[in-house]
Length: 359
Image 1: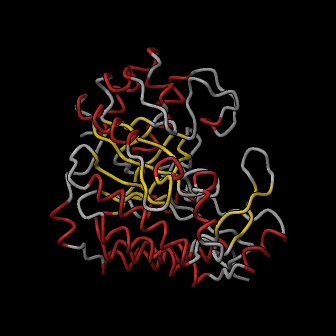
Image 2 (image 1 turned 60 degrees about the horizontal axis):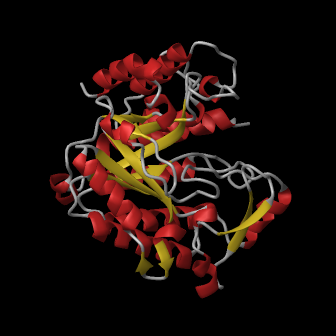
């Protein structure tokens, strides 16, 4: 019997060989791109201005502007850019860079999407906090992909000439947040995916279309996408679809694509110590086209998420250990949470980490 580990190894070997021999960056996009962003990027909170203390921190190179799609495209083709505009202007005044991340899944989806397009296929997901069943447009639905792509075009058009904005995030699998979450909790949920037409081929084609549409419009910014596995309840190999999409994307668009994970912590598998990198294998295989976010802040971490839920008392050492692992993965920038950036006891660690990242 071929094990899951062996299947994943075969996929990785195939992709690695293909990457070495066939990646040919899109020359037009490469000439338009700014220098790769390095250093410390602060996390953001949806619809809430970044604290001025973060902008003023000399060890912070930029921050994330975060909001819901529903707060930006209030009606179809009717936009409210006021919050994003304000935050971009504040960043520019403080000589910081920003990446724009709009949640286009979960509660971030505008109500008008399903009202205007009732034919969109739906799946149900479980709310991450309440575990209650919640219906969500199928990620691969052609109409939904087109509507999301139209929004990303409007976003790109708005900020394409603004040098403060260095990257725009797009998301494919985001039932709760902007991160990747493709879990199947039970047979009923699995059936809802199948009834909505899920196949691996359909998913891959939809993901490629989303990236193609975004790249067509985002010529001079980096494009960030979260990555992760597909539930084994639906596919024979959890990673084959993702590797196919990423291999296609890097072959076609080269350096413009950045993959990201939001689970970096002190217990993230260290490539220098283990070959079992779990979901972080993707980041290792496609380095240095990657960036990462801390899973939580060490300043307020009652569940010890920053250490794999293992209790700790020394915040400095956990903060530094998580950064060290991120640097081993070749991350271009790392995103600690605002609480840590505002913590005066962590400024030495923040400075040390930034000095290494910007080298």
